[in-house]
Amino acid sequence: MTLEDFVASDPRDIVLVRLGDNVVRLFPGNVERPVADVDRALLVADAIDDVLVARLGFGVRDLVEAALGYVDAAIRAMAPSWPEGDFIDEASVTLTAAEVNAAAELVTLGTPSELSKSPRLARALEWATCDAAALPYMIGHPQSPFGRFLRVRRPNHGGRADWLPLAFLPEITGFGVTELAASVADSPEANRRFAQLVAAQVRHALWRFSTTVIGPNDFPDGPAVTPGNAVQWVAMLGPRRALAVQVVARLHLAALPFDGPPVALSIADAARANPDEPISVPMAGRTLQLPTGTEVVPLLVLATAGHVMAPSYKGMAGISLDELRWAATSADEDSDLFMFCREMARPDRPHLFGWETINVWEWWRANGKILFVGGEDPAFMSIAPHLGDAEWKRAVHLAGLERALATLQLPALRDIDGIDHASSGPPVVYHWRSPGPSDSGDMTDVTEAVPGSAL
Image (tube, rainbow, N blue to C red):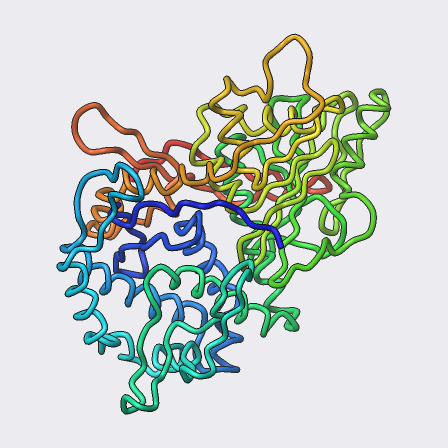
């Protein structure tokens, strides 16, 4: 068994996310990136809910709305009793009478009536409820020791369903999302739709770093994708620098769906070894020809229904979709992603252990945008974990903006591409606007973002 130390973010922090027209408050629980978990769950819902509703009578969005609706109500019940200020050490932490009384009232609250206002919400809650005697407890489970069950039914109390403690609900909800996704992983259409939505989000994130993102023609329902070993997008950083982005998106992902190295890595290796030869990039149904002498840097992006740690190869960075979106949000310069991936792809880079790539990204940014500064590179580097809490801290800072965007019926923060924090007055938010792909004949399409569209 592998154990990892972890200190959860402070639940007294106010972090808000948009669910439809509503804004709900998050409880961090035992997950490191609760904001990313919600965004990913809603992406999965967009891909598979049509199939799920036909099979089960409810979808991922219903499960998420029910779970987060209760979390929001529970926080409203508990928060007035939470003490203020910092805790000096563990010995100084005490449970107050006000907290005990608030917890008792929360148990009495049960399930708010609005969480079962529709048959789909009621079915989702029933799916996430079991008899108390049947509640699993799998100690050491990597995601949720209680499986998908948010509530337990106690026969000796009139069959009333009681919620599990707040601290466990984020991880249980995430597990429920992955279980629902796995139940339709046999559907080619659901997997294809998920891959299309992921590819679109990857392209959208790349626009932060390049206004020229090359890929095959879009279909009417979204980007062209392939389950094979191919590059999805090429982001150009000037006429002779290319970021070859390979995307692997599966609702259930146990291993990479191809043998051998990712083709983006093979292309970059070949371009470096043979600088005078043409560069051919296989894509979905097409082949892109890059000019001779182009510097190609590879990147592998992984996406699935749950939290995933992307593998990094020697000569190639791996990153999850969540981490790529974070990079697009936190970058300072257009060149940041290319330079980060270039350093991760260095043949002489030290062996690196860094858990999730977001930890390496945050270390790289804080260290002057270089992994190591010194006379001689080390043989091995270990990057501290848990730097992903930067996302929670940012969400705390932007909670007021999330509520204001909802009030004004503007897109949620997850759909905002840039924020200008003016020294006075309200912040200005930006969203990339695509004019749509243009047919370029025998050449692969170039999709350009028009930056700076203010909302």
